[in-house]
Image 1: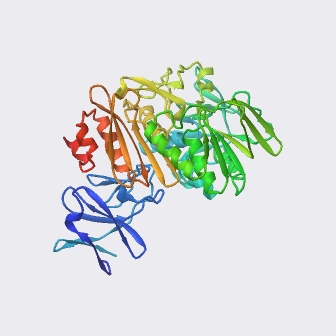
Image 2: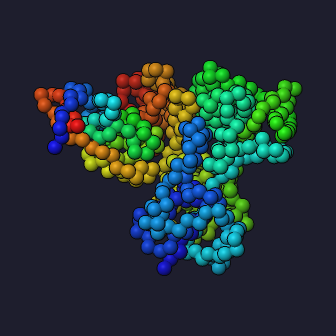
Image 3: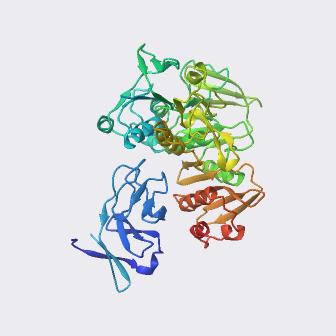
Length: 104
Length: 408
């Protein structure tokens, strides 16, 4: 598992079926809350043209890039087809005492 | 084994080729393009790639074509379709049999009537090589004239300013972005260009162009003369329909297809910029879109229908433009709107929702820094597709989540 757990935000700061951007140590991530109230994290930039995914739309378990509509499953990082063909890296997430942590 | 041939190796043709294989087609796929490059993305040509002087951003690397067993023939055009014998003849004289044929021939820049392309100082932008030629002129201290205040002209103006060139943009109509962009948004775009130092001349009709050694002179009807190192003509695009017309296929502002992208020949499909098609969402009105996403979607749909599918194209038209740090996004077709509702989203970002006389949402146009309007425009697109009649007060209130209107 991961070396370090980094605090992201309070669990209720992310709406259900939504995403926020989280920057840490010069890197950028996207942290998601699914419709089933589970939390997930991926790299923050689309693998197509380095656009911040947190400006995109979450529908069910899919994040869609705001620029060119590249789609990824944010639970697995899987690219869902053109124009994206490279998967997103995912990161472990845990929620403790109402706070979301990302494992880096 | 079946032979499927795709004429036109742009975004649309390439997506169709991969979609055919992705859907399990096991026959031969041949993709034919006139350029020397593998299929690449055209949107960056007027934007980042132009500024950076980057090479073509390929839709897919060579290895992916090989892995998908897609034969790409570059630097070749198709001179004839022999429908009776179901084969095409290439510019190099070879013939190729097809079982199904997809025409994804795209569009080319509309030429300025009577323009002498004498010394290479009057150019247009369509290809990577066009962009490279333009870039050679975009240096500090050079003066670039751009004819046409549409997306291409304005994006080129922004890129030219980034590279230090002086820019004069000549538009014949009273404002920029007359086609499909509301006046409020066009005004913001024009103001921003003015603030960045672009000289915009609206209502300026061209009387004549002289392509001379060392300069190009654009004489306007009001007597003014714009002298520049380069004139870029960005006055729209013309669909490449000649091959289809010569083969006797129906055309109507593009190769005419039905909702399933079939031409008047059941074995020939057409998709992308070269194609006009009926749009059920707007009363079966026949439209032709010059858009990256449409090229992708239609390429993929044509592939499915070439394999026996019967799905009709129903996507909401969608466009975007990047200029400086602003992004403009439009979903739907706004002409025919009776009322407009404005939603302010902070930092100068806003969306205009266009409703028809019955209150149905038919389009949404947004502008703002970065991707500020992207998510709501995407949701608006879904609301448009769902033919929703939203409460204008809810659209106007930024605290109302559009996703909730979708669920309602």
